[in-house]
Length: 591
Image (cartoon, rainbow, N blue to C red):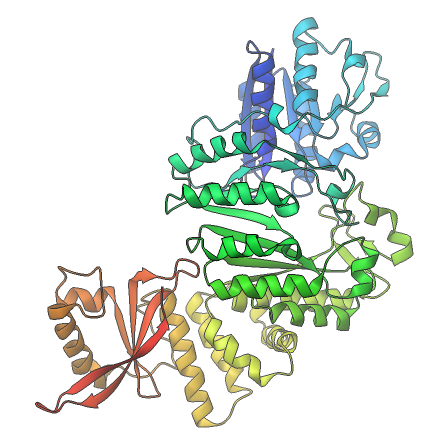
């Protein structure tokens, strides 16, 4: 028999670690089994996926089901059954594990569902099919809900959990994973009980042995993988495990690979924080779920968090300037009205994360949150991803306002392209949230929210917004300088915005600077061998309205923000020839 494990991912850069793990485990148990993987994205046309699977002519297809792809999967299985009526169709994953009987009642083309962790279950299902050529003796396979030969729906007991060391490492080579996120898990489960999360159902945590983890991380380091994303739900819940992995990647750092971890920052101790401080800039990045700073909300969602310790840890890591921090908030949680959520936003924004994810509650099947919908007056979308519409505390109108605010946060903060301007603009408002809400109103009132704008156009729009709030010439001049700084930090853009100063009067000055620099390479390291004309194209010198000059060095970038190194100069007349001298005034942005 030919078995196909299919995944429909959200984006091409994503891979599905689940199906790779299932295939590798099953092949180890059953070397003779013919198992293939098919990965697609939700951007594929359904007809393309259907044709591809049809050409493979599998006897068995197993689909991995999540909130981002379940609608696509169910539409596909209906058509797949029409063109391959003899192919056995199975589902697995969190989106079908908690209402398996109901799914089978509604979808007659589905033969069975693998519930929960699937490695051992899939292996046993494959074995049953291979032995009899059809699903027979399935009563012995734990963890499945299925139709028997008479069409009756049967549900077997849960499958036993494997130890983490029994789960195989499925990266044998990196072919096929180029330009894609590489996922890795060193633990399964979570010690916490957050009511919105499926990890709260099983509170046990299983860890892969450190020696095995180190051996597998060595593979990624040797292959110089750009990023390894740990999918552990709370990576730092076991101190020895955390320290062991971090010490290993520090000692074997290849200068390229970045490791992403989801952590609870309030669990960090002094040794862990001190270790982070000694890491190469960009070696790790941290995703930290704050969700809310409202103590009643935190209690109600069964979350354990020491906010003061979390804020102190975030500030400590921020001070190192070597680690990207991504902080998360969730709108729509119990006891959080609009005022409370904006207070949470402001508190987290002032922690100065590199990115602030303003997310919206998703009411997942099987979660404790789904059982409390009536108590919370919780209304949510009928279709995946089951996102919140309103609660007792938050109206749909409030949700719409926060959605518009989220878009502004993504454009003007999380992009990292307006950092200096936003830092200055924040002073014009009573709070960060007030600033982003005002930007959202401006965008909507002018119809900008319905248009996809270029990067340069966004600078023009932000300047127009600033002009509507700031009238003093000297203040507008300072904002133009901020915008020009932000614009050129990212790239040596050739087009200039309408508010930019005319560079023509300074052509000789700029030409003279690069002629001098080409002789001595005092400020631009790494450009040796370039003449002055090449230097002027590879770097950029901008005359600011405050009279200073900024030199943007694109060969030497900040390893976290990827911003160019920027050096500020002041001008003074030379003593001998009367020519202007460039006087070093400090780094604006340095690596």
